[in-house]
Length: 65
Image (cartoon, rainbow, N blue to C red; front, side, top):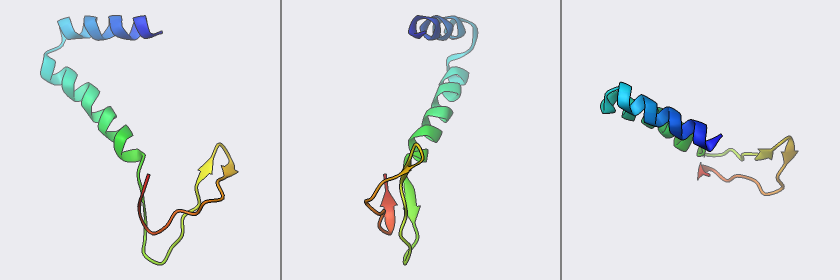
């Protein structure tokens, strides 16, 4: 699978200008990076759920990862 993705990137790199390729890779990467973090409002407590199982440690107010 990794070889297929690499081949697609190489093929696209030769066909599409580098700026468009950078945007096409950069935007999903930024969305992924920012989706990792959660902000819990003041006075609230967050509950982390992993694959349907509740993690017993609460998320405190503020930025959580």
